[in-house]
Structure formats: structure tokens, C-alpha cells
Image (cartoon, rainbow, N blue to C red; front, top):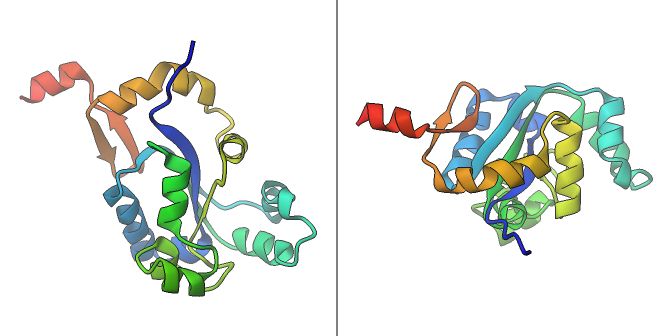
Length: 183
């Protein structure tokens, strides 16, 4: 039996350079909404250097590892589970190239071109594969059962009317009874 998954989950992190400026954070979130991403879960928090070293462990030994771990623990992060058809590829495309100068040239409407400052302070992070998304979502949202979401929730989220709860920074499914009451 083949189960088709229409919505794909991915992890999105808005980095400290965005989160430290409320208007910038709001603008980036608005871009995400305008590009039809669904905010499934969201949280805002500050993480220790040790946590960021663990999160970016695959980059340990690379020239940018220390700078990245230090920067990512320097201020608040806005972390989101996003969903969209082909969500991983679509989110990476909206983010744009990692290097800001390349983003400005090759993808001028991308988040990194519009809001990034340097290669490290480049506004956001996005999972690069399904395996990475699964691991990264588990890191920040250990209570979120991805398999159960795909099994029990994906189809409902894909077909239902959704509204964006600005306070929680999450979409919510509008209950059919609630829809009928409001009409």
C-alpha cells in the first residue's frame, strides 16, 4: 500500500539577527505566510552554546562551526515546523542561497537577500532533506510525533479551513461546527 503525502514537514529557524528586531521578525513571518506555508508548531527561545553545538554536530570541524554555534546561542530563535507540498525544497528556495551576496544576486526576493547580513547572520535555517527535517524537528519539538501527524493529521490539515493564530504563531484547523456557527 502506497500512502501519498501531500504536505511535507520541514524545520524553519529564524536566527537571532532577525529575532532581535521585532519588525524584521514580523516581516519574515509575513513572507512565509504569503508563500502559503502552514505553521504547524512554533516556539521562541534562547538556546545554550552546547545545545547549538549538538544541533549543528554534523558541521563540527568545519571552519564556520564555532562562529555558527556562538551566533545561534547569542539571542532568541524563532523555531517553526512548517508544512507545504514539497515543503523542504520550497522553504529552502524561499530562504535563498546560504551566502547573502549570492542570494542578493541569484535570488533577490529571497529571505536571505532581503533580510540577511552575512553568511552566518543570514536570517534563517532550513532542513536540507527529509532525514534532516525529521532529526531537526525532533531536536526542537521532542513532544511532536511526526509519524502520527502524517497518519492522523496531514489529510485534515490539507483539506480543512485553517486560520492563523497570531498570538501562537501557528495555524489552527477551524472546526466544522465552528464554521457553521459563524455563517
